[in-house]
Amino acid sequence: MRSANPRDQIKLDSEEMREMGYRIIDMLVDYTGAQSQFPVTRALDHATFEEILQEPLPENGSDWRDVLEQFERQVLTTIDHLDHPRFFAYIPSPSNFVGAMADTLASGYNIFNALYPLGTGAAQIERLAVSWLRRLCGMPEDAGGLFVSGGSVANLTGLAVARQIQLNGDMRDAVVYCSDQAHFVISRGLRILGFAPEQLREIHADENFRLPMAELERAIAADRAAGKRPFCIAATAGTTNTGAVDPLADLADLCERQGLWLHVDGAYGASACLTDRGKTALAGIERAHSLTWDSHKWLFQPVECSALLVRDRHWLGETFKDTAHFLADAETHSKEEVGEEMNYMYQGIQLTRYFRALKFWMSLKVFGLGAMRVAIERGFKLAELAESLLRESGNWEIVTPAQMAIVTFRYKPDDGDQALADTVTNELTGAMAANGFAFASSTQLLGRPVMRLVTNNPRTTPSDLRQTVILMGRLAADLEQRLRQNPTAN
Image (cartoon, rainbow, N blue to C red; front, side, top):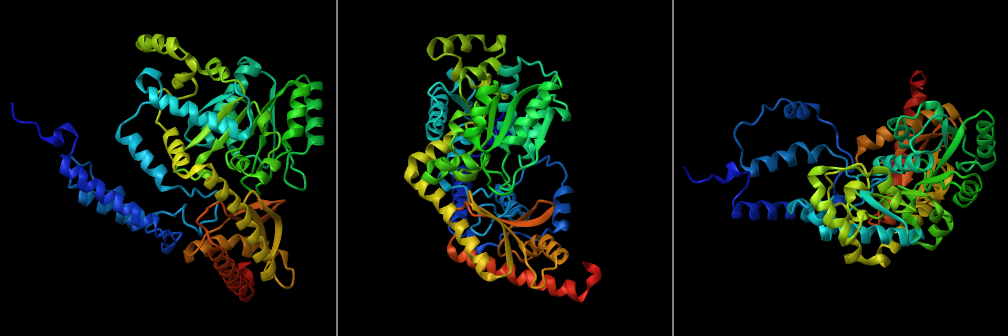
């Protein structure tokens, strides 16, 4: 038998691994120190995409240097940089280098974090990380949870627990309530779980874009009178549109009085509870039955890093526990040692689970809670600065003032032409994307287009904001001039 070729064993030799690893680390370090020098957005070269799409299946391998060069040329040149200090669109993901290295360790050691005996230390770290989150938001000691990919899966998992614990799986005539500012993952999650569209009541938000209590209570009473079964309120702690926080304490009181489940989508805003002003805005979040929390947003982790917390950790096992004969030996051993809660395959949707908690644990250990708190508070202050700069410029109407590091605004022509304002506001995102210096996204509030700036990146500077506001003013003025010269385009 001929000697084994390392490639046939799906591995590189040690020197190749070192060389490749050092090269990638150098790339990441160079990038981490220089994000602001990159364009925020990239022009899309469809010819480059077609070149990738037309690649044949690679029967024979290539030199890793050539593959890495192709990655640099065809992937890195076609991405927007969500961790760029002038990326203000959607909800940015600032990330951090320690978290990225933790992902490298988790992947490199191929850590399987689903069954306690197969990844004991990993399970312990995830349990600890969940406990840290629980303590930060004030949930009780009996609370538990797990890390998942993102807010979509976290909300889906939380709603699945609500369905099981509150309804014992019987969805007939059951109704869920949320505001029309809730993220679409709530309606999508309910659809995946088998709820019909009419089983979700979207209540029109109040003037502050929060879930209004009076209208909610009327809707619940009307549904009960019609023979329906209200069972869950899906509140939001930091909406994507405006950063609005639903009245969590009042909602918790209502749920307690009426025997309803309070699910809180805190994917973005829950991190603010590290700060004093965040604790005030989020009062009542600790009373949620289930809570989603994206660490890859305002806790600065690389994607994917989200968590679901529940008030009673046993609810997860009641919802997802199943049997598997091929895992019986390991299950028996782990039950004797720690109980079922450390077998994460029975706490959520996944059996095969990535060790996502490592980057959260490692980042918090390296930087400390104090640094995280300062970085979050900086996000609040940057949004307030952005609002001030927008007001001072005279080009913009503030639609919602700075809250949860988000401010929304729309263009304000001198003559007050609202149709022109709508068109300029609508087209500004495209103009910013083409420019590449900074990027902000748009949405609709009360039927009108608005722009948003989200300032949760701790590496954003006041200068970044000032230059972005100046750029937006110049681009908007150019758009207005073009539209006035060509009224048919408006």
